[in-house]
Image 1 (tube, one colour):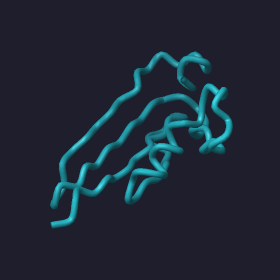
Image 2 (cartoon, rainbow, N blue to C red):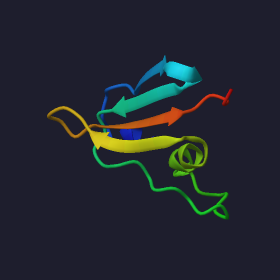
Image 3 (tube, rainbow, N blue to C red):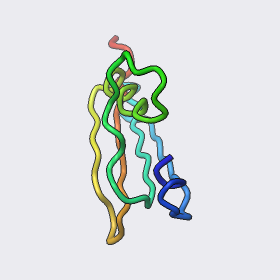
Image 4 (cartoon, rainbow, N blue to C red):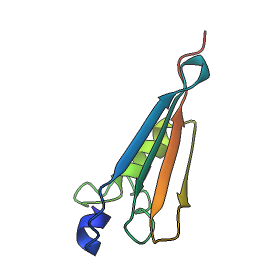
Length: 85
């Protein structure tokens, strides 16, 4: 966890909401400096970071990373669409 290794004491915050047509929207933020680890190649099973964006990238219909507030923090957001009717 980037927050643990950088020494920040703020917790990770997660917000989730159901949108129209069964869409799930999620925002995860922390105050740790730097951006999340880039997605891993699928053959790096021993690595200890980088899986989060790989999972999001393969499952989400839309996602991104943005900085928030005056500090070094950032937020990762993603959206997963429900089944089509």
